[in-house]
Length: 378
Ligand SMILES: Cc1ncc(COP(=O)(O)O)c(C=O)c1O
Image (cartoon, rainbow, N blue to C red; front, side, top):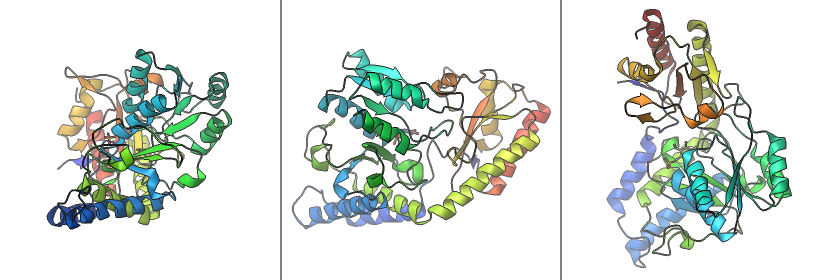
């Protein structure tokens, strides 16, 4: 089996999450909206999960809304804030996930808002004085800036940006998909209005996530047809998914210190081994200890054809990602790498790590890369 270094795309399910979901699948089939005992049992699973999740972020349970994942939560946050608060301006960056960028672009195409992209440097760090300039000229804007970039790992300070947003009466949404479960987040003490979670990025199931709305914020539903999730999101709830996500989040936060140390050590070992074995290797984004510790975006010397690199790694036993979409058989450079003006001739590979990775996995990857570069298999 290949070594799995694509944990920013998705993660293997934790056994504990599988067991928790299995139990619900076998023993709880009621509709949570039903008033009888079967329904009440299902509802209790959902509300227990909501309470447990909320406690990790030090917020009331009523501020957590379950969704089908990060993309839907981002969509609700952006689309419904624009509608509900008559937002006429979105401030974001060219480095955001498409769940944010395509949503904002569509709203702008429809003439509902305009968009400004805040400047950033070559590492993907936000230009704070440009952000302040934009906020001063557009009060009451919606600001959407991700907590950590899923391709290059550069992080923002929620506190610093949130304080600036408050000063200018802007609403602040942050895509926290890559940081929830990896960093502690006291949302009651953080000046952010909306954050999102995707369970499958932290060893939970696919197809479930949540949107946090700061107490006091109420949005209209994006999906209509039922009163679930306090009228924010219609549709019978994904009970197993919600229980699996809650179990995954419990595991992540109960063992955060040991998981973080292990993943950081693996990532830093990979970085040092790459520097030692591959001449002229470099890194995109923030590969320092301040960057997201779960990933490394590596810029390789252009000796191996860019389009074939990922395929060769796969054949030789390493599953990683190019942080790019595949179109008609060739790799299109990602919008994030384009935005930081990376050298398009150099292959860029994102290796992303989890607590299940080992030093042996890194040694295997380095040996494969050594082979590729020594033989220059083209
Ligand atoms: C930063 C970021 N936002 C949003 C998403 C989308 O999450 P989901 O797969 O749950 O829709 C992802 C996953 O690729 C992501 O990395």
